Image (cartoon, rainbow, N blue to C red; front, side, top):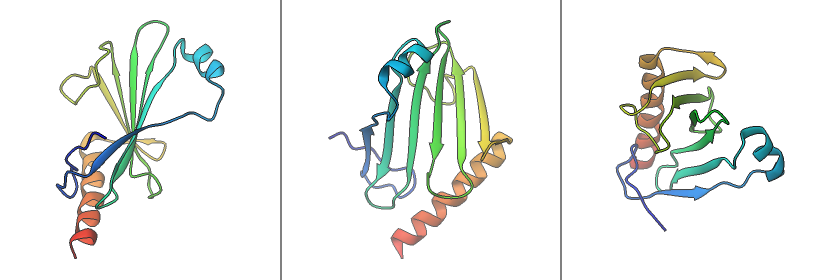
Amino acid sequence: MERMICKTCGCESMVPMQVMFEQKEDDITSLLGHDPESRFYTCHVCGDNWLTVKETSRSGAHTITFVHQMGTEPILKRVAHTHSEAMLNEKDSATWDYFMDDEVIDQEVWFDKLSARRRILKSVCTN
């Protein structure tokens, strides 16, 4: 099992897992033109987690959606739009959209909210 360094607590305890969709695969494939790739990342030390869903449209455009710390309000989500097939980071993406619940917010505000969540998680697991 592949382990990564957690961005919250710094431990080598972040584990990615494949996600299976409840919807019939044929329904998803007909909507997207392919099977979406999805992974859930969770830290076994501090509990930080996020879901990543990569979709490719029939036109070849790629969308990668990240939903951070599910189960905590508000929902923090960011969506990358690109024409590259590789998983991306902020430097590779053509366009990023940032959301708090369903409301579009500025990148700085989004990262401030995520940083505050991660500070709280880190303080809980280190105290």
